[in-house]
Image (cartoon, rainbow over all chains, first blue to last red):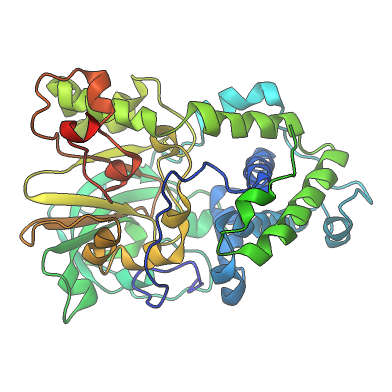
Length: 219
Length: 212
C-alpha cells in the first residue's frame, strides 16, 4: 500500500538528529513495548509481514508523529483484536473482561534465549530456476496495490541490473494477507541514482533493493 | 523489575506529549495480557536484558576486526555472511540472513530501511532512534551525502556511494575500510576502532591516534 511508511525520497522531515551516547531505551515503557511485541509475535497467530502491514495501516498523520515503539504498540493492538486475543473494550480498560483466542504458545522467560537465538528464517525452497540471471537488465513493475508490498514507490517502473540472486524467500505481498508463503526467488537489483531521481541526481549514487521475482520484468 | 519511574529520560524527546500517554497505554496492555495468561512479564525482562547487555554493536565490531585480521574469514564473509557470522556465535532474530558489504577505496556503503526499521539485530543490537525516524529513512536514498554530512562525514567527491535499502529479509553489515597505522593491532584492539555507525555506513572506522 502507498502508506506513510514508504518514506524513500520524501522531503521535509528536517535533518537527521543522531544522539550522542544514545541509550538502548528512552523510557521504561519502550522496554515493555519491545517485550510485549515479541511475546505476542510468539503466539504464532500472525506473520512478520502481517505485523508490518498493521503498522503501515496507521493513519499517516498518526504514523508520522509517533515514535517507533508507539507504532509497534498500535500495530500489536490491531493484531490482538483482529485475531481475537483481546477486545477494544479490554484494551481500553486494561483488564480481562472475557476469554479470547488461545495462542499456540506463550513465551516464558526460560524460552527467551532459544527463541531469540533461533529467530524466524524466511528462506524457503522453490521449484524451478530463477527467471533472471546476474547482470541481466530488468525493470520493476509499476503497481499501486492497496495491500502489502515491499517494493518501495521510488523504485517502481525503474530499470536496473540484477546484481545477485539471493535465494528464495517467503513472498510478503501474499503472506501478509493469509494467502500463504508462496516463496519466490529474490534478487538484489541495483539502480543508478539518475534512473531513480532524474535531473539533479547525485552522479556517484547507486541504490539497491531486494526484489521478489514477481516485482520484475525483463527490460 | 517493572519500573515505571522513567520521567527523567522523557523531557528532551521530540514526542514529549506522547510519552506519558504511552506509559499508561503500555502498562494497561501489559496488565491485560498478563491477566489473560498471554504473556509472561519475566520473559519481557529477559528480552530487554538480552538487548541491553548481550546483543549489541560489540558483536559486529568483532566480525569486522576478524575480517580485517583474517583474509580467509573475510572471504567467507563475502561468500556466506550468515555462516561466517554465526561461526562467531552471533545468530538469531533479525540476523537470520546476513550480507556483509565491504567499503573500498572507490565505494562507500550505506544501509537504510525506507519501509520500516529492518536492521541486523544479531550484530548491532536494537537500532538507534534516528535509524527508524523519517528524516533518515526518507533522505538516505536520495541525498546520502547530505545525510552523511549531518553525521560529520564528508566523503571525497569521486567516491561512489552505494545505498542498500533493506526491503527483504536480508540484513546488511557494512565492513569499513581498515584504518592506516593499525598493522600491529590485534583483533581486540581493532574492534575498538569500529563504531555502530561505521557498520551502518554513517561513519568510517576510527583512527588509532583518536584512541590514544
